[in-house]
Each structure stands twice: as C-alpha cells, then as structure tokens.
Amino acid sequence: MPLVLLTALALCFLAANSLLTRAGVVDGTDPLAFAAIRVAAGAVVLAALAARRGITVTGVRRWGAAIALVVYLLGFSLAYRTLDAGIGALILFATVQIGLFALSLARGERSGPVRLAGMGLALAGLVWLLLPGGTVRTDPMDAGLMIVAGLAWAAYSFAGKFEPRPLAGSAGNFLIATALFALAAPMWWGAAVTPFGAAMAALSGGIASGIGYAMLFRVLPQMGVATAGVAQLIVPVIATLAGAILLGEVPGARALAAGGLVLAGIGLATIRTGAKSTGSRYSCKGSRGS
View 1 (cartoon, rainbow, N blue to C red):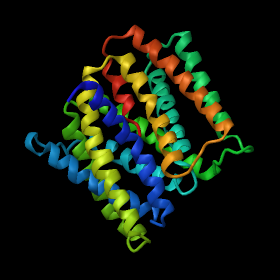
View 2 (view 1 turned 180 degrees about the horizontal axis):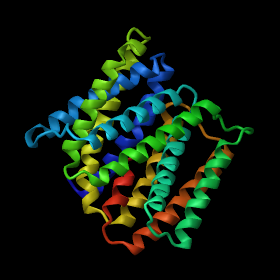
View 3 (view 1 turned 135 degrees about the vertical axis):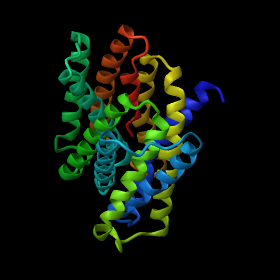
View 4 (view 1 turned 90 degrees about the vertical axis):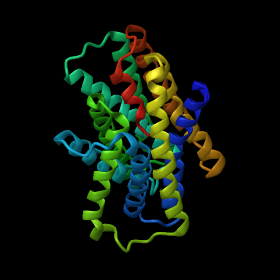
C-alpha cells in the first residue's frame, strides 16, 4: 500500500477514537466500562499482530507505560461525557505536544526561539479555548480530565522512545493495562453498557487503536521529522470535521480561532524542529497521541 494512503488511513483511525468514544459515552455507556472494553479489544488485536515476533510484558518501564496508558484511557473516556469530539481531540493533541516539549526541556534539550514561540502560541490558543464564555462548550472538570489524559499520553509516547520493539512493547502495554482494569472491575463491573456503546468501544480499541497504531508504527520510520509533525496536525482537524458531519457538533467561531492558533503554534515549532533534524525518533514517537 502506498505510503500516502497508509498514512491517511492511520490518521483517520487515530481521529476516530474521539468520535467513537464520544458516540459511545453519549449513547449511555459508562466511561469506565467503555475504557475497559476498549483496552481489552486493543490488547487482543495488538497481541495477534505481535504474536509471531513475541510480546514484551516484563520490565519496570513496561509497568510505567501501562499505568500511563490506563490514566490516558480513563481521562479520555470520562472527558467525553461533555466535550465535543473535535474540541476533545484538540485539547488532547495540544496537551500531548506541550507535554512532550516540557519533557524535552526537563531533559536539557536545547530549543531555539522559534520553537519556544510556537509552543507559547499553542499554549495561548489552548488557554483561550478553555476560557469560559461564548459558544465553546468546555466543562472545566472534563477539560481537565482531557488534559490529564494528554499528559499521560505524552508520558506513554516518551516511554516509546526507549522501546526497541514498538509493536511487541505496545501489545505488552495493552495486556498489562487490561489486567489492571480487570483488577479494578468492582469500580466498573455492572455499570451501564449499551450494545451500541460496547460496539463503539470494541471498534475504538480493536480497529482505531490496535490497527491504527500498527499502521503508524509502519509509516513513521519512513517519514521525515517535519513530515511527521505536519501530518499529526491533521488528527484534530479530521475529528472536528467528522464530528460536525456525523455527530452534529459544529464548533463556534471562537473554538475554530483558538484551534487554529493551537495548530499554527505547534506547526511552527514542529516544522522548525524538523528543519534542524533528519530523523529524530523521539519527535516521531510524539505523534502517536490520539
């Protein structure tokens, strides 16, 4: 399959997580139960894809990544009780990129003025999006949960920098996360689950996450840093457009302006970073968030 088509499919699958989760939770499925079904379905698909080459389930780092995955899944599902699909994807996307940027600074990586300005612009756009008033519907608690989910996914993506076998490691992460959800079953077992919501959770975990991530692992090594950075800008755009068409969630003028500011800032920082690098594995890993 051509690289362009494979990349487009991977990005659509990643954006679909927001749509599927929003649709399933709005239908009446409990967010915790949705997350549990999603991670189990993702574990089954990723384990099947990685089985021939082995699955990595050992190591302290594996548990750290699995816990970050659990926090991401919980925050992501709970946030979509009120957030529109597109706005949720934008908050998640912006938080992941800003979180990865903060981690790079904490590790002593140098950042030029253009990258700093770009991330500052993105942060300003995110703050503007989250300010109350106007037609932007952002419940403070659920917006905060999506920010927590974004920070957890940034940590998960950062852990991927040290993963020698991404597919095997991801399968292991999902399997351990599934076990953690099983241990916490008293918190969600017996909660409301609609047939439609269960189907959305299975599609989100098995197809949008499992197959989507597998596609992403295949295309990222073939993409330059700048290309990967620009490509990831498309995810919240796809989620917003699809949310408007499929869920009737049309963003207002302020949400579009704030979102444009976020994407412009991240694009500026990412393209600038890509111009100075010719294959940073870390930068590519950061594009998994969704």
